Length: 238
Image (tube, rainbow, N blue to C red; front, top):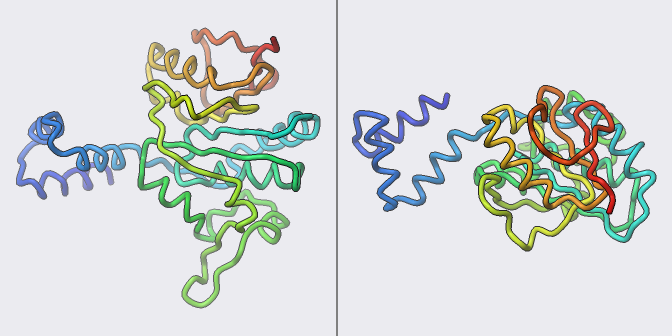
């Protein structure tokens, strides 16, 4: 699929090779084309409540014992938003009307547009508890049959924005009680992993929790974090 979409871009510009396309991008004269290329290369599959043990830990071990004014969670590779909304439903179930917010970020602008809409096919729901579907989702009818939309009471507390994890984080990002960085590190070498992890956990509050995928590891990565459960880490309290 990626090769097919890139081939269409070569055809669009009348280019013969990927090398010529690379040179075109490097001229700096086509910033929109560069973002389009990023979108093509960074489309990732995701679904609701992926790796459910993470959401169980979030609810039972973190949120239920949390004592604060405003719980903040960053989904640092949110893709089309399923992870961010799964987190939002988990927080709503436990914190209710108390102050909480979820921020989802990605490099890909196309998936962020999808995330903001909050509309998904019903077949994305395999891991979702039926009570969450009934309570936090609106099933489509007529032309929207086969789709559902995340309810506004969740969407209004979940925001999305573009962030490149390989560059300095915006100062406006602030600090978070929990950060999810799942299914990202598997794509990078050790040096790049180190750089990304250090940058991301700089936005984690003392005592905050850091989640990676069960298929990933922080082996040989210096973090200063302690392991509290498989693929779940905690930053020391001051």
